[in-house]
Image 1: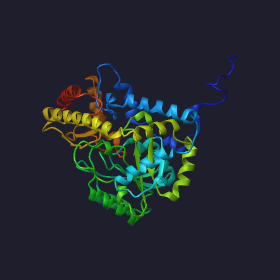
Image 2: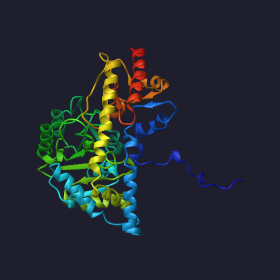
Image 3: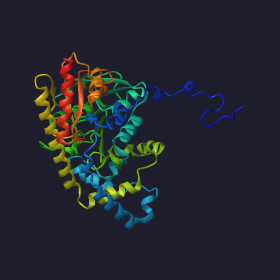
Length: 406
């Protein structure tokens, strides 16, 4: 008789195990599933959300890491408290954007997704109501619907984002929502931004109804046109808004470094939740990123990155105008990474996806961003990952598939 193995211990059938509510509700991000498909030969992907690889500051970061090892030696590889100079830099950065804060209000995370997870665990019990946009980043779906929340999905407008009047109606719900999660700048997936007046109004609603806001803002530094707008947190007078920022898109995704600006009296509870996940953010990464910032390298890096993004966005919009004018409508972002394309209602972009994939072009179907299954005739297109000529070819392939479907 064969001895039991670790892979098949006696008496245990994995599919028969009692799973947690979160494990039953949580769904894997469509974007992660598409990564393998995007790497296929000859595939032109408009599906990603990554910055231009050639624009990442490889050599500068190499020098910053070397500086950290020379200066700090083994200390850079130990557990340690959050790196105080980095928190000070972030506090200065946020104050320059109109947010009243000090370094004591800054909590470091492994990117915005961890920030979303922490604040969700801080505020949300399974079954409790929560407000999200009816087209939103899948990570926000994961920390709300994925944790068994009762989701109230409010409409979005392709011109600017969340419908503020609908948001107020949701805030009047009984019981009160535990929080609302919003993306104000270069919205994922829409690519658009809220106005300053809308942000001030949202902050007022948060204070008036006592509904905290999670402001998910990984994209605001990626502006290539128009004037910067203060974050919603800049209008916060009741300390009810949690601001989430990240270096993942403004510097490099693999750094996995972000921050929360949160009410100071909640920091001990946030710290305890974080410790239950993974203790702390890499000391090495914190010090290397601060070295990059302290050398004054960020402005030139962002100038280059945003110049590339602007050229690629213009290439995408130009190609859409050439091939889909009169058939589709699309957003015109002033920054970020995405354009939102809306087709006639009869077209289902999930059904279209297989034919597009066979033509070696992929995108993200709109309904992947909706917990209610809406936006089936829409798609999110990324412009940062492909060069302009490849974008033009990708849109040409996509338009051919769409025309064949009409």
